[in-house]
Image 1 (spheres, rainbow, N blue to C red):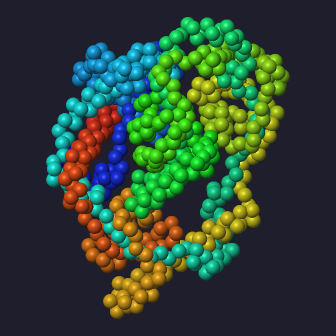
Image 2: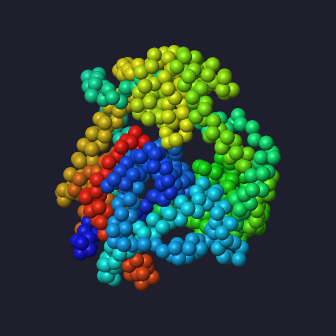
Length: 635
């Protein structure tokens, strides 16, 4: 198996995985704490259930982790069937691996578990020793318990043990590692000329027949889906909590009865400015980013910092609030950021700090030593939690009342008034938007569209995943339709002109290429291109992906070119059609190899280990019986 993998490392797919994108297999948490056997089940893996609660926790944990890595991710990007199905696939893999570990007799002893937990810096006090109060408080703040956390940690340790046992023979030899280094560190300069689509738009004169033909064959693009407008009333803990009364005495009693829950390690409150630098940045881009961050630093020191952050920060999550970050302790931020922040005094602004995200400037607003959160600081959060607890107890009672009234034909507005709540009205929404907005199952959305205007759903609709219920009436209806050609003619014309212009650009590129590769006309053709000819800076394979517009044929052609002749075919790129040739191949610097030898041996071995473990997973999946019983929850 290992030899086959090593041979396959010559392929582009394996090399890109090694040299550009190191893919780490992530096992989702959430396999511990299955205490309620009556809760909904999403899937069975060889008869073992994956509960809805388990799936939801893995989904939320993954979203939290991904947003820490990429703050710019939107809710829409994280609420797709593909994303949810990937979470379920991770849970299935974890179930299979844990079952395999159990069959092999692998265990994690209590002593191992204690040692591992005690080694986690986030659970340490000011003396850098494990503190059980800090441990319990940290888990409470992350909405989990020691029992559940320890079960999850135990599961992950079992996964790691099995992975170590099954990949013990995956060491990379030094020649193999050097080959990987040379492949990944090689760079090229590329000569290219682009024939832009925009230069041929005026020559493109599509006929009415072409427009009509395009419209007829692309009617799906101009379809307006059925839409509806709802009057609705969410019956959720969050909605009901606002109407609950919690006395100051109850808040104080909770604070005094749970002293460990309000202990915290040393914490900082900071603002930051982030100038993002992509992993594929060239040396020129790196240098520009460093110069820009120094200019921004000069303005940040003059202040006000908040205004400078709003103007320049590229962190979409914090820029609107002037770079404001929530309180954080050690272990919650990436190491360079953490080290710089903890070295500041309140009011100080850091020098530029480089992390994997880019350049940061940090201003420390305040710090607080390890200790107990004062009652006044914790009061609002305690009151909110107690209100939610009271609301949670009332959800079923309110649903029962609502069902009786709905069955009697009472209008939604009257039901809401009796509950001391108010209905809201939606905008016009298609089915996908209804499902996304309210988190309803596909069947529930279909039932809403089937209602007559003025009619209400006969029963409360469950909002997934486990957020509560929705009472709704349809107040407006629009049937599905296709926009007529005269309404979309400008869009159709622009699309057809672009297609025709791209064909003209391709024709021109092919004509020029024919002259470039014909010895009789090469000189004259090259002279005519002198003004348009451009040369890239040195590009590694990742930078070349961006430079070539993601065209894999062009990328492979340049890196595999044997000489400086023009490549034998034009290539489509976003802006138009390109001709290209290798200008210079720059080998990996030999002097760097000695410095990086250990890294490439380690990374190559890790990649082979992952390939071996993926093969094990594939075998486990092939022989397993996986039954998804709640497809609606992962759509």
